[in-house]
Image (tube, rainbow, N blue to C red; front, side):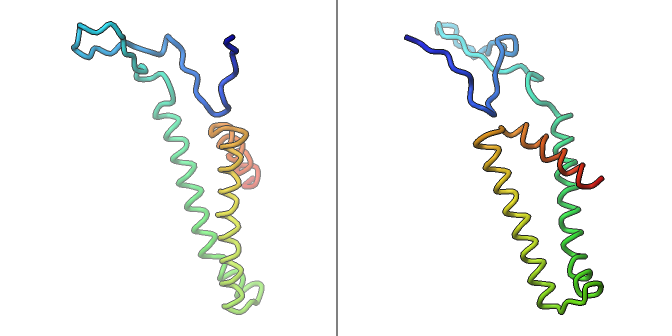
Length: 127
């Protein structure tokens, strides 16, 4: 008895229309080989969006990290050792949050939904 099940979350479903036969030059074989058409999935427009978002997020991360020590020492009056310790804690928290995002992506939501949700959170926090 064969039971159909839905694909795991985060997997990509490929349609028959998105496949094209591969000409491997060997006409004596009976098995056909297929590959995806060139623009079947993704594309450079999606890649540019993700690259731009990652570049801006990285720029913001390092910009805040550099200025946070100055803010903690000059505005909040902390000494250099405490300010450096607090910036280290902040950096560790940021890196830990990326591990939480990776866990949610791999276990529950899938990579695309995770990217979309955290980009919305990123925009809401900025605005």
